Image: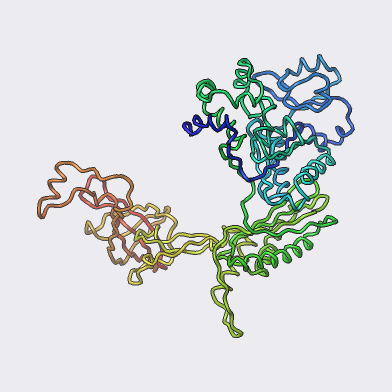
Length: 553
């Protein structure tokens, strides 16, 4: 990237920087923390005194947020609380809860997905206060960019927030204009940014101070400067911010909510609140979404239902299907079962004014012709799995999947049926092998008496402080380690290579006795049959150990 940045000097001088065809709307709420506190605390709603929020930094209490009245009184962020009180004795002081304020802003950003599905946070300067919306292709729903900007800002002002915004073809330019020239809508970021201060490029304080000392106070002054000298003094990151704002480098928007290609929505003239109304709307939207997916020849495995409350909060529900589907009735049933899990957690607040149903995890799904006398089969079974997982949770409905391994505890795994993977044809179990009805999650150590024959079964065992005397046993069945899946590389020595090249010589590459298992089926005097094994072989460095692995009866 460094060489690309350094060779854009000629493009800057001739104004030939490429600009993205996308459109971004940036919103900044400089007094988010104090505005939220005033809305949450009724005692502060009618307060006329200046309000500041403080946080302990390096052993001192310093201001981290302040309202308009506090700014008018000459206070500023980073000022010590004692100095602020000396300037303004009637100051209202509260300690900030950074985690709560940040989480509220994340919920606030999600709520703005009712305007466009692509909404991201801008945390370059602060973890809250700035968000950007990709409004490409959606402005016509609001009557144009001017009407959209006015509407988004107007509804926030009505809620009591201090907000300003701008629209530009790049994220960096939209952020800069929202902060330093709010209300601007531009197609040419190069000219729109030229008269803004260099702080509009989202630089750190050290870079801004150094630029000001050089006499570079406006962004336009950087256009004709040598990029090599700027890079040498401020680094590649500085030029990257400049090129991102001007559109020479694409800055990627990272949305908070999952990306969806197909969705349908409904806005209400009057807010709704009952869950029955929500589910009824979801069923209607499912039919609309099913039609769009059918036209595209697609099915989806994941569906999202977004409920937008009038108090800038978002309720989201997601369900998964075992296979790609576009059956509207099945999708609606999944959300009915999912809503049952909400229980008392569902809170519509002052009402829901918009509902969106979206689909993700898309795949091709051809149309199928069904007969009048069709017998229920795999499709109905998959729908049953989906409904059970939607009601009980995806981790509550599991299936056993065979794994291509002869190690007993590795031969079968459990996986969610709604996210199952393809079966391995080589993993089918061998019916000729005798396996216990119940397998312990992990082999448990046992204490045994010495066998009459070194490689034979033991006469008894002590398991969980209980002694079991065996009357008969069968075996052994030897199961060796899977050398191909053991991590690490083989250590070849000159002696081992020479032995391997000698006809009839035994290989020393693998120490079999260390992890070899000999399994026995042992029956005690009470008729109970156990599956036990000896790990290791006699005559090696480590003595063999005995374990209990399962029960036949």
